[in-house]
Length: 114
Image (cartoon, rainbow, N blue to C red):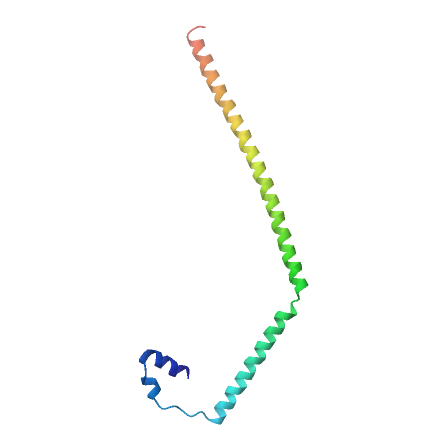
């Protein structure tokens, strides 16, 4: 049937004019058996999904959310520490620049004999 649908989509009405093949009772029985197996597999998958109960899912989600909250807290603490370190580094840099300027001025004053 799939082949007919594909041919019909590609070739238009030509597929409809082809002769239809008769399906033997043995093939039909095999097809029924495969369909029954597929239905059983679908039922088992649905049962597996139901087996994971909602409280377990809630616990997993709660644990994940608490871990995310912990990581956000750590990240904010790290950012605060980094900002403090950057500010301290800027203070030290400005202090050393000021010392260099004073040293140049002192050196120049010594050159001129002051």
